[in-house]
Image (cartoon, rainbow, N blue to C red; front, side):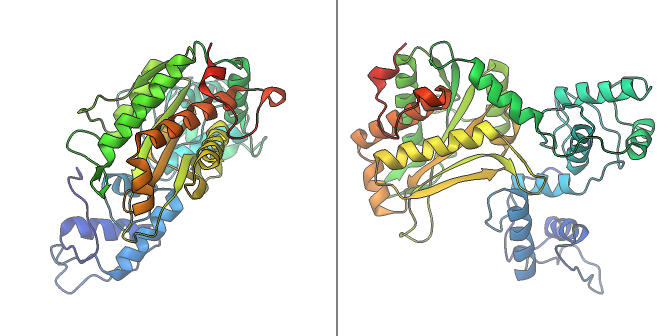
Length: 381
């Protein structure tokens, strides 16, 4: 079904019945069918709310108890088991699901490098599958059908815990050299258009992150790197389109800028996120390293509370083929954070911190510097 809206506690209707059914299949919810079997009476109750939150926690998506497009699509992906359907590479719309992740992990365990285990059947997965098929004497068509499923089930694992994608990411950073000149970096101001994000104390997330992104872009340009924004001041794209833009550009890094809000005015600070899926034990090693550098630079140069770096499976982090981070810089619901973010000089400090983190990512250990010590003039090509 096409998911047009979000569902939360107290909602009723056929869509809620479908959500509850999917949670029941995953063993997260016990569903009692009422005597009439009416779908229109299905209630998003407290138990459903708890089950949704547990599912979101497991999947590395925002834990809010709300079933919007991201959570709904994750629920849909979770129902697939390897062998349930034919798997193949469809460039216009990648097949996604737990069965794809299982195939990727199985290929890695046998020594076939399919890249990141992300549950997306992309070109690298197809290439690894073709190589597997050649090795077992099957027609290398890159389609995982009955004959390939049978071969996969019959072969024992020869390698366990392989992380070739992490090694390739790290090697690519080393080969790129220490200077930023010539590197292509995508700076993504979150939200935009009609989607203004969060607000508070007279501040608007979409407008603020665009202004901050422009400052980051300018400072990156001063280092000799190429920096592109994913949107203009009034533009808007969804996360899948933003990831596609970065992939098509062949970017070296993606930096997505956001701000947060909370019902409690005491909540505040900065957190940075990278691609990681604890459920299947895979993450972007360079993304994690970059996220930690961002955190250290921002919190070392400002008094924002350090909320650390965390793995997530949000579409922008999951679908980009290069290391990507999403930075949640301050809470607009917090008067202290909002006051800082309203100050253009403070936003200058933030922009310099982000660019310093980019530079430190590429510096070899013997050339790295202390947190907070790099300045833009020192980063020029």
